[in-house]
Length: 107
Image (cartoon, rainbow, N blue to C red; front, side, top):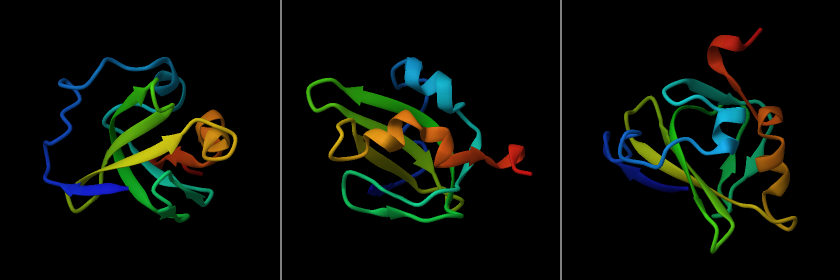
């Protein structure tokens, strides 16, 4: 994870339009909680119960890196890098709804 950045650093209207991956798993401006522990590309753990508001995502084809821009309750913004290869976070990226869920949709 990279940050913290002050609130407003990653304005969704300044970032690329929604990626196909993003529209499948997340909605900008909605709050999510981690439901299955995972480690990101910076080797930072994301434990069950971690909550953040999704701002936007970015993808680097050069690095095969998906970066999530999120805001925590403290209003600090962070980026969560995920590498799209089998040795890293491919399972997290391809099965993201198995790792997080929208807070309002919890049962």
